[in-house]
Image (cartoon, rainbow, N blue to C red; front, side, top):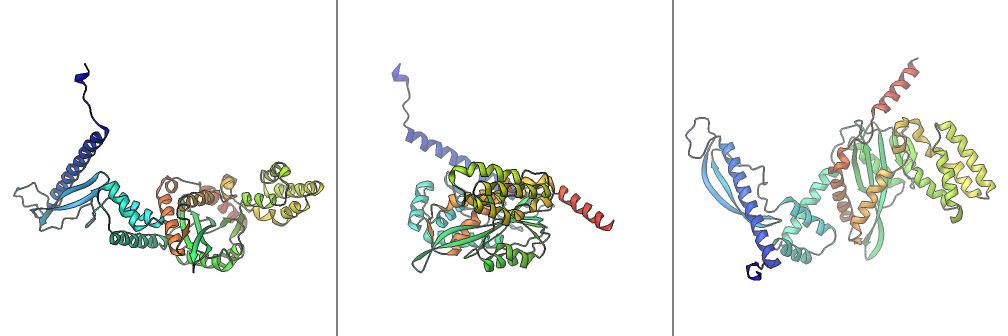
Length: 397
């Protein structure tokens, strides 16, 4: 019985399977290329038809690297019409996924030699340092084009924050800040509308950032949501005029907790949340006064002082539709992205300069934008439009 059992090594099986996949990809791509050529010529092979646009003139061979290995493509040659394939870009030699992997490895700080070894192990062909350099330049060009694209829509709500990364400057290590802005369009969709190196999160950096956004077409802003970073609130007033500012309630809580003993943090947290659970701004202000008085009785005078000084800027969201409150009173939408970026850039450690840090951050932001994140409606902006119409009617009346 045992003599009838076929012995097959895992290595042989994997090799055979990879070969079958590679052959299948090669056959499919060549068939698709021929079909494209037929549509461009507008005639079957050897057919004599008046409607034809051109003639076939054979094929030429070219190599194309895929995740299954290198395949041979038979590219159609045509006379009377230029063969432009939608399947494979002109002069492209490897899949986009592979190019993106190479770019990400390079931007993540992997050495050129290591990238060469990895590509040879994964795809059977070694990528030259020149190819890696060219891919990196192309990535920078695409990222810069995306980063500086015109902003054509209105964005009533924008969320802003800074991401701190490490860079080496003159053999010294220092922080580099990447300022990021997310806009919610008048249709209710989220979009990453800006990312720029801020050097420091100060007035000048934020002012330049906001001016850059306006120069690219940012308009229709009614509310800016963010943490109370140094200079940011002042910059909002200088650049946007009467646009309202909402301080992130979560960051406000954390700031209060810095002067609260660990044993009392949970109790104080409940008191703070009660402020922002009120039905309107007047009730919230009254609740804040009561919380401050209670904190003083608990001998937490510094915490009470922080509430009295800063709670007003955390209640701005109550001037907007109640349906939007839970999403415009915090900066969570940007905080989640910041955590993802820090996770992705952790492998780099220290960047050689601010540009490489900015490029890697933007590469990740582009990926996030192209995912479900950017295609899912975040808010129903009809609520805001209705509120604005009601205010206009009140002013007329």
